[in-house]
Length: 556
Image 1 (tube, rainbow, N blue to C red):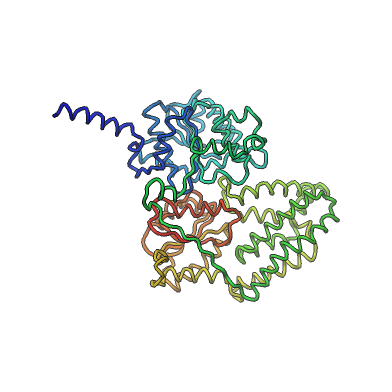
Image 2 (cartoon, helix red, strand yellow):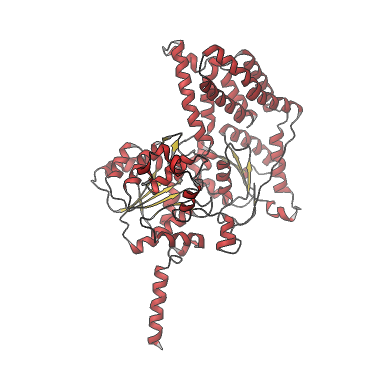
């Protein structure tokens, strides 16, 4: 009997040792992860884009792949390129499975630079640190067996030109054609085919043998090409796939999207009308004014007006605090034009310098608003206010008067003379969450859930924080129920996580810049205080809450 059992035990042992499902099984392996692990074993070279939606465990999938490949091949040097806010999160995840990493950063730069080739090991660093020339020279000297890029959409194009990440880090990736490559991104396609294809070209550098990176879309932006890449080098699954195809059970709870309509007061209606008038009717008349006073080409004027329209709408509709701050910047008599004159520029030179700065800002603002915020340390407030100061030379008197009229209404809201209907609606939602125990069945998980309030702007976040502290003390008797997380206190991220995971009422006000990489599944209610400029940004926010480990229905 024993003689027959021994071969069976051996087969079982080998099966457990080599089957992808059981490798790195301490993290509740799911079948959608195992599928990729199995498929990459047959890819030579093993280079893929994991584009699963936010919350499906791309980090765990990548580590399972590496742990599996280690059984079959040597991975002497592995490089992880991740956003700065995710470095510690990756280190913790790897430590939990016995992987020791070395961080490439400023304080280790001199030591690493001494080596002709980096010693064997697993290395990690911030994308925006390692893209710099002094780090690139070190990375290029080493023979990497595997490269993993998290938030890989950050390597791409601005217009037709590659950004510095794609140029420098992408050069290393393209040169190491035989290295294992995993690009991770829940938002790999931002609606711009050439930008997306620039990332596919990192996986398959042969695309660049056909044409240059700026013209990839002319050759490869075709349905048949995309179809050939799916489930071969590009993998994208959503939560419904996991529930209904892979696991055949509810791994992910539902997510309900709700629109809250707010009826403004009479004075608020006047403010909203002013903002829309400024953004539409006044800018239409302003177009003619700029044509007559500058002689600029039509395309240049249209680009500048689009920038001004963005400033007016985004800041004017966020909060009265944001409106007053930015509209006052537009009204400043000592703006960028005067500043340049004082620096010795002539009037025409100063004007041309401002126009060039505005054109540069146009490209930068597009990147900021469509979701790629990783290299920016602060929220959009500073960018918008800095941009606003460049319009002082070009605003006519009727435009200024309408701005002043709008600012005065917003100031009356700030003093409490006029009610802020959007803020009061938010308070009613919070009261429903924490004080209404008899809710319809479909809203059962709403009661006493933890709430995340997202805003694009830091000044709006502090405006809400101040108002909700007062509300929490009055309604809940607990000021500690309200927290704030912006770029100002980003170093407190671990404290914020512990606070949010604790018992009791929790209302966290945060921004997109601070919230990047922050997993918020302890909460199940998400409030967008403004309409997001891009569906990518909305998807990113929702994914922070509606993700693996969320035990309740998510309400957005």
